[in-house]
Image (tube, rainbow over all chains, first blue to last red; front, side):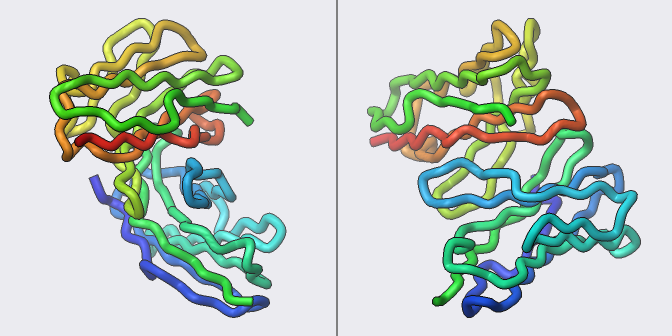
Length: 111
Length: 114
């Protein structure tokens, strides 16, 4: 089922720094690319999502960059905070159908 | 956004038994799905729960092992049948109001099979 490749597996960033997580997908039919944040013991929570008609979407400190020709997208967390420490999953799907998730990135933001 | 409640939140079961997980959404939703997540791992789609008809299963998952019910637009159940230790995992219910609506998750059911 793994059609979305995510890197890095883990990431350590200093407080105030920029966290960058990358994903690549294979299926060109995918048209919806969400990012989820998951804390221990909780379900994944939708953070931000993008559709392929735009190359960038920003919500607060979180930005998705999307490169349709390269079939790649990334999450940028600006001014990273210790409270951002969590596991982040990218996903790709077709109108919520057939949603495929990346392997996850464990982010640690050091104070 | 939809609030999704799952019961039980965790359970320890003996091999050979079955466990039914309930998923309740606080509003009517078009789409409901069941995922499995090994601790520290990614999410794998088990099946789409279809209201009024049989669930649609992903490759590697079968109805006899994971029967699913969806009697209405707010409720679904997943049964893990004839459990073995390999079934130990987190089972997540998810729902979306429609094809273009955000997909939300419950907090999962952590199952341990001994």
